[in-house]
Amino acid sequence: MMIFMLILKIIGIVLCVIIGILAIILFVPVCYKVDADIDEMDYTVRARWLGWLIRFEFRWKEKAHAVLKILWFVIDLTDPEAVAVRKANKEVKARKKQEKKQKKEMRKSRKEQRKKRKKEVQQVSEQEKRAKQREEFRRQQEAEELSDAIENAQDSKGKTAEAEPEMAGTDVNAEKYTSEVNEKNASEEPDILKSKSKAGNGAEEKKSVLNKLKSVQEKTGSAKEKINNGIAVFRFLREQELIPAVWTKLKTFLLHIRPRVLQGHLQFGLSDPANTGQVLGGIAMIPFLYQTELQIKPDFEADENYIKGQLYTRGHICCIHLVVLLIRLLLDKKLRGVIHMIRENK
Image 1 (cartoon, rainbow, N blue to C red):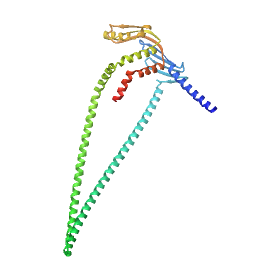
Image 2 (image 1 turned 180 degrees about the vertical axis):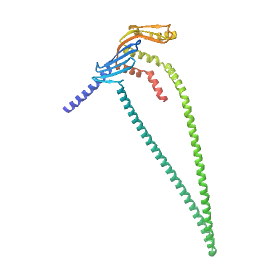
Image 3 (image 1 turned 90 degrees about the vertical axis):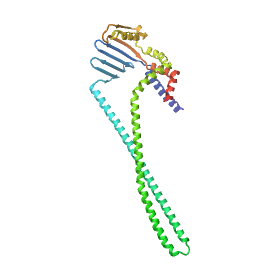
Image 4 (image 1 turned 45 degrees about the vertical axis):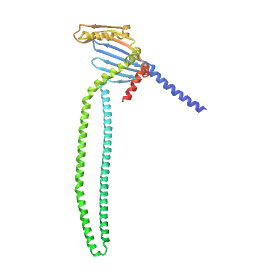
């Protein structure tokens, strides 16, 4: 009984540890800060998880600088020496992968060569068997002819003296007949083999030409097909009413991950005032921007495209919101039906 209780305790501890790790991953938020000075081209992004245990910082001012800190370990992602070491490690891994691929290809080629050799040996053995069968058939025919000649000679009663030279003559004629037949077959066999080889080479050439034409057609039609497929997919999604269904779920997700603080002022302008108006209309469709301290000023008289100002934002993101979004998308009947249709078409 005590052993059973100990096993249950161990199982319970392991389950608690797993549940705790999952809870930390899903519910502990990743806090971020973004501070951008567009006029001076100075950008900084900071993120932290589990308090200050894991921290990431990226800064761009005439040069990129990224640092990852895990507890008291510091990893400089933009250090030239570290970058060189990473590149060297990647090159070593790539070489190993290439060597493995080459070894696999060599093994495949060896296997194919062995298969070809086996096929050739089988063909040669079959040809030899056929030749032996032909020879046996010819010998049987010759033996039958000789036996018929002997029987005819023996049937002639009272002419034993004349039968002997006739038998000798029949033997000579049989030998002449067999020699003539063998010469004809020997002369016909190479002609047949040559005709077969020519026919096989012609068929192989035709197949190679057809394969090349097919590959060219596929390459030329690939670009057009990709464009047409993209347009067809967009139309299909709109016909199946998937875009509004997905957008309603995305809005809740974006509402949860929205920045809690958004400050600054931005001024932008495009060379075409119509484009400036379209961009301003797209910004106006984002509702939470009206509840922030961000000021946006469009410039409809600009001759060139530009943007200037300062921006500061702060917020957090939880993985549970992403998991909930994926679950809601998978539970949608329309989306599941479309996925099922796509799998059936494949």
